[in-house]
Image (tube, rainbow, N blue to C red; front, side, top):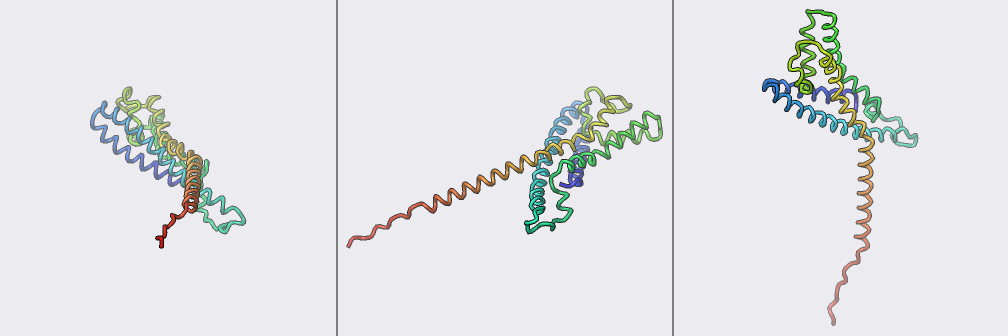
Length: 215
């Protein structure tokens, strides 16, 4: 997995969740609160599963990279940098989290600064942009804050925390990569052993005797 892969996955999830929540927003407060929370939980689970897929694929590439590092390997020194960068790495996952959260976090910070410094020409545009980017997470506080017309501590917390939710879900799944890879490798080895054992049984099976007619 490359950092850009994580960014694209997060951007796609955010885009779909924004569209979905804008549609739910038109239904009223209660439907948006209930359905919005359900959609948020499902999106977090989906992001986690995406991360698991990324982690499993990255561990497969990591094994290839480790084999290529062996001087006796026929592929030694032949792997491209693009392949090496896709290998499983904790640092890649962490960088992907910050890269994915950068835009909504920066917009949220800009709105908070404009509100605190009372830069009136920028308050409304940055408020609208920050609200739009954080709209998938507003059902969490919708029961207490039905409007987004002023900056409060809770609103600031949502703006600062929400950009990291989906990226961290992907990262959590990505970190399961080594465990998933070991599990798949174990299952593959057991499958090969069962196939060999079955083939030995078939080979040892005695041939049926053909009864010759008596003369």
